[in-house]
Length: 211
Image (cartoon, rainbow, N blue to C red; front, side, top):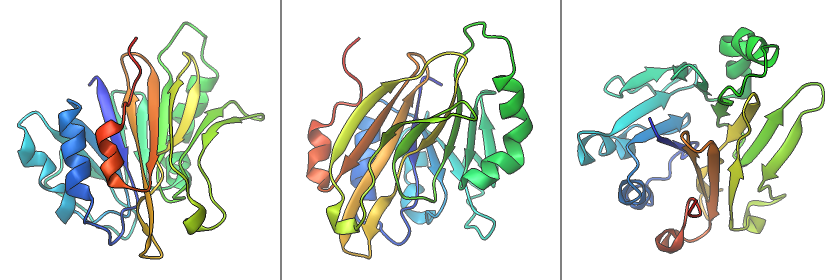
């Protein structure tokens, strides 16, 4: 797996998801993780767009489940270093010992450990180094109508644990667009964070600057 797209918290919003899936396809992405509070129906086409496509489906304790996904569960682990769940509490419930063991391990230029979740609706990246964790990126708004467009590409350092929240891809209060998602580049150890108010802007999104 070279790259992994992260989407969460679409709720009842569906209209813009075909455009998002088409964008992922145009970017050459084949691996997509849905981090909870997403109805299955808009994501089913992803599995038929390309035989190489894979869908990792995370659900909260109340569902909804998606048995036909490549993997489906309350918490998922990918490639031994990517942990997926809907909430941070579920990350700790299922992967606490793994995160702690990694944090206390020898610094031997290991690939970063990536704990990804949804639920908060606030896009953010946190460098988890307790007791002094550091917020590296956020795109928060006090009121949904104040949500702003923002894009960033962050380098992920080796021997480090990161908490990554892609934000919500939805209409807050059913009228305020907060179209956020993230893409992990697992080869170059970086993450692209994208927040849009108008999906027409997808055409000009550059996930990663040329290396």
